[in-house]
Length: 305
Image (tube, rainbow, N blue to C red; front, side, top):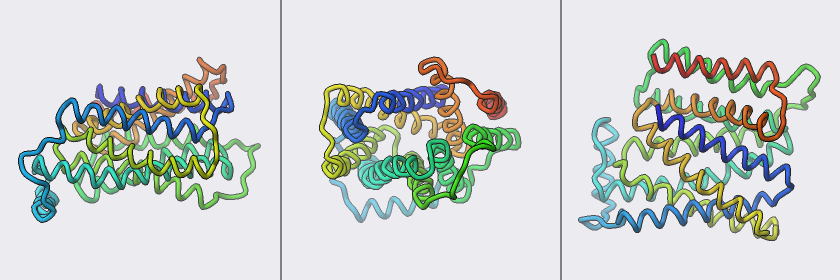
C-alpha cells in the first residue's frame, strides 16, 4: 500500500507541474524533452552504480525465447538474470514509443476535445492493463475489491463529466488514440513486472525514457521550440518524479493485483491534483469533485479490507 501511495503522490507532482507550466505559457515540448533527459540520465547512473549491466552469461535470443515460453505457462516462474535484462530492453523500447505517443495525443486531444475529456481518456486507459491482467493472468479481485474498483472508475468519470451547459461536437479520433496509447504504456509496466526479475526494473525504465527521449528530440525539432532555462529546469524536476512514479508503480504491481493498482492510482492522482489545484492555484472544489474524493477514499478502504 505504501508504494501505491507514493505512486499517487509522485504522479500528482507531475500533473501539477504541467499545470503550472501551462499557466506560465512555458514551452511544453522543451519541458518534455528535458524531462526524458533527466529521467534517462538518472536511470543510467543507477544502472552503472548497481552494476546491473553485468551478467554471468552472454545474452542469447534462443535461450531467452525458450525461457519466455516457460514463464508464460508457469505464472510463478521468472526469467533468469540474462533473460530479464533482454526482456527489460525489449519492453522498454516498446513502452518508450507508447509513452511519447500518449503525450503527443494528450496535447492533440486537449485542443480537439478539451482538458476534461482528455484527462478522462488518459486515466480510463487503465482499463486496458486491467482487462489483460484479468484475462491473461486471472488476477480477479474479490467482491470488496471489485466494488472498490468500480467506485474508483466511477470517480474518474464523475470528476471529468461535462455539465449541462457545456457543448461538445463529438469525440475526435485523438481521444481514442490517447486512450489506447496511455493504456498500452501502463500495460508495458505490467508486462515487465510479470515476467522479469524485479532488480532489473531500472534497466527497463532507462530504455523507456531513453527511447522517448530520442523520439522527443525529433518532435522538438519539428515544433522548433527554443529552450529556455526555466523550461529546462522544470523539465528536469518533472523527470525525477516521472522516474519515481514508474518505479513505485512497478513495486506496487509486484505486491497488488493490476486490477487494483491501476484504477486506484488513476483516481488517486486525479483527486490529489484536484486538491492541489485548490491549494496552489486557488481553484474551487466543485461538489462533484468532493463526491469523487469521498468515492476514492471509500474505494481504497474497500480494497484494503
